[in-house]
Image 1 (spheres, rainbow, N blue to C red):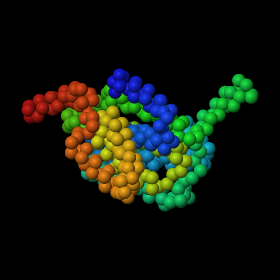
Image 2: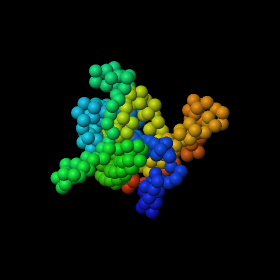
Image 3: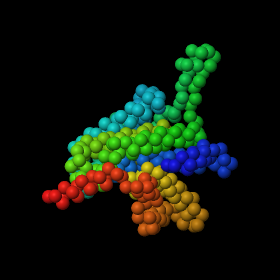
Image 4: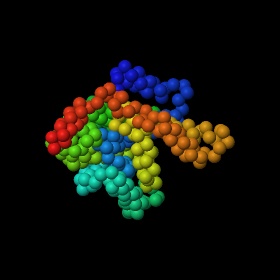
Length: 346
């Protein structure tokens, strides 16, 4: 994102919680938007960069959330310790799922990932000894910042301990999370790894003929995507303080995928816009429809109609990937030219 746009947006985001019209409910919605931004950026790696249809992303989201919840309840670990552990756990499951299945393509791969997400929900529902099943997982501690070991060393009367209370600290923590992951995604996109992903998406045969190990790069993409999803789940667990298997059903994967597609497949900024638009749209319909005398349950009907209209008039999403980069990826063009020459020679 251009600095001339990014810096004013960041300034607006920082002062937004302190505006007179900002209520606790609005802060909650803003934080929810940022949670979905993280998920959309994570999922964007697989379908957006590599061209694979992943319908099981919510499984990694649930793994991260329950990892955070169980470690908090059973061992009392800090949020800051759990975040990297949850990310690694999500990435590990991404490798375990991706290594044997990423040889599949198209519908077959989508079905496998869909099955994985359903298996995660079944595990969370049936393994009552671990997850309490349908009863859910209550009693998760909020995020806290404990610097008392430093303050007491300086002065025994000092106690630098702060426990998050209300929506405001979570809003800023979510903002930091979005900025960090956005920065990571930008670095990945401009790296050799990111260019290889784009090459695989545009023409796997050309990429393979140029020495790109397609399976390895796909597994790396799947692992990073799963790790980011798990980080989003970790934050979600310590924010809501309660987890249930119903929170991680297929609908969540579908919703995040819609955010990525409507925002612009393969475009990081598009994923952010898609998340903001779809979350805000759902909340607006929830408020507006009852005032118009319509039952709130009909919001899904209008939600679907609006999504259809968006795809009708913006089939490539709000920000198509080429519009963001301003040019075709040179490595892809080079690979295509080389493949065309080889085909002509054959």
